[in-house]
Length: 415
Image (tube, rainbow, N blue to C red):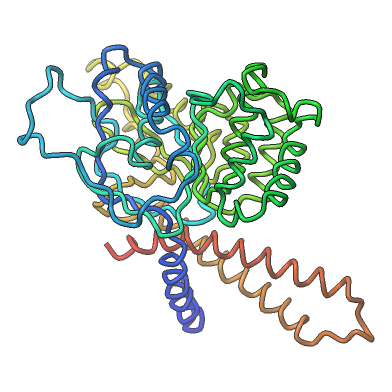
């Protein structure tokens, strides 16, 4: 597709601006990371082993980095080389292999895969709770993790009251702990938002129902104001009303990195932009699926149907004149590894579409900015000015999202 010289200059500037923005907004960087499944639970298999690992980790680090405290900015150490330690009785299962990715602010990622694929293990590895087989994980200076784990509330004293737990979490948040009154007011607001009636605020945590404890667990994680939020199967134990509040918070208020492990198609389609697909095959090549979970499930169903078709016998092949049509190409999937691959035809078309979309969004923003710059209160009302300003902000967010996708593909366009 033809791109005018002006457009090329614009795209070059966009790439420079976006790269500077990426450097400033990077919270976590995975470089050539490989992860093996924890050996103690390997014999049990499936998601149960991952849940047991969650409980073991949570009991030793209950309100630590996984629940909101910043981590140091130095890279996390990798585990010793296999040759430097005694071989385990069973070969470890590789759940993630040579994974490289920069987690940026406003990233919204779902993690999917079969039971036992290592989804919960990946979340714990991102927090430094699982030793890496190789590679490194670097974290930013301002990183604050938040982890809603399957293990539930652990290490909570029996006499601690609901409002007390939330106040402790608020005090641990950036800017918290300065004023007891301010912390209490913030805690009260959060409790109301997450559907705790005032008569339950002073109830002991141990007296809460299972659903209330899960809701309080989520509230305690969010109260610490994490900018890297990990939710492990949040739809399993939260009621529909609480899920509605959570969805509104994630869509309207949360501006950090969101990573969600879930099998819930509706929830993932609503709150994430793309997926990391863990194959669970012992090889561990993570796929970055640049589409919805619904699209992925439909693609997988088509592939399974194609594989179920019987293989033609030689006599049948000889009897058919036309050659079989080639298999459909896999859409919009990029391997999240260090080895960059040339773009497929589908991805090249996506790159052209993104370039056109960027130009269109930029043109709309320039047009609105001209209206704002030439605003005349005598001819236009201030409500119109406010509307223009809001539209400019929304266009900027859309443009940033498209630019990030364009950068990923453009980097491989010249291979």
